Image 1: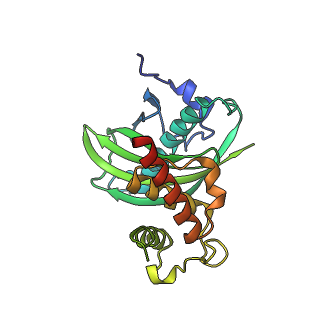
Image 2 (image 1 turned 45 degrees about the horizontal axis):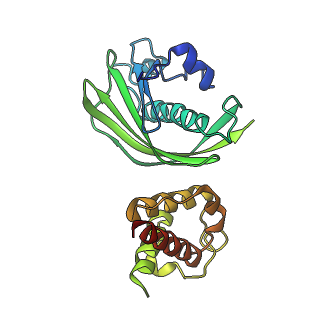
Length: 152
Length: 85
């Protein structure tokens, strides 16, 4: 069974976010239990200009955004497997809550984030996912993220 | 008060960031206690995890009080017992 790898072109068909807010480069695993996303953190990230001028650290809020975007891919996949749901309909996802967020070590230019997201509870209009972020197999962050889903 | 009622009241209190004694049995979660649909989903997710049951989507609009959540949990748990036997 394949891992359902999604290229950046596939990711852009699912996520509405664009530069400088597209926080996923590639999806390396997609199934009903989890999605694994890759985000390469480069010195050219716009947020490094100000965060901070003398010490480059990826902002925690951007890590949350990356986790939430990986979560969108997971929800898109789960909903697309359900018969009663139109997979290609345009949906917009609103952040509803962030729980149990923890940041264990700073993320710096050159790090590759491996973001693993799992469903906690997904309904057609509302959902909760849990996310863990790894760099070199060491956990650097985690959060539980809830959001509402609107078809447009 | 049953053990189940005590446990579910604690789950609701934690999600709503209130004390268990501030969750009356019949109080309306949205109108009286300030909950929203996201909190309702968090309550359902916590119940699923604790009691190893699956709450179908159509139940989401129905859970408007501790009493209604308790009724739902009781029926899910009794169905679970039946399928096991």
